Image 1 (cartoon, one colour):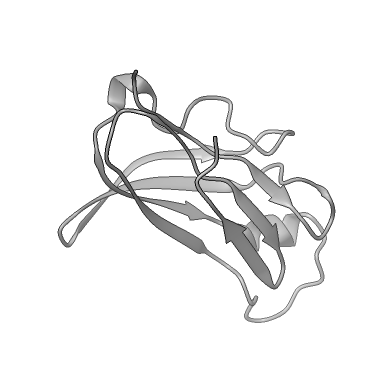
Image 2: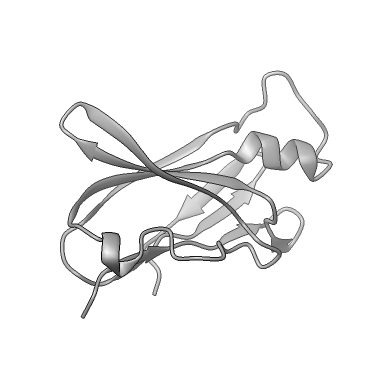
Length: 117
């Protein structure tokens, strides 16, 4: 089996996929945090391509950074200064070649994630 990484972002306050949300992927090695890719979610709340495809997969520690504040601003969520959730980082490990799916359930005042399938 080959390893790869995907996500799916759902706006639980509005009850729909989070379209247009910027996501950054970083690889973490010790104290070094290296940006690997920047993507934006489509109308289904997913990225048009795998975040980390099989050809680029390597076990290790990674971080997905979801730019929730900019998405909430663009979606018409009433603004606040500062916004309660602006940037949501999720750091996780991938230990073997498998499908890693890291979804984000998002609202203006909370979020949840898990290892999906």
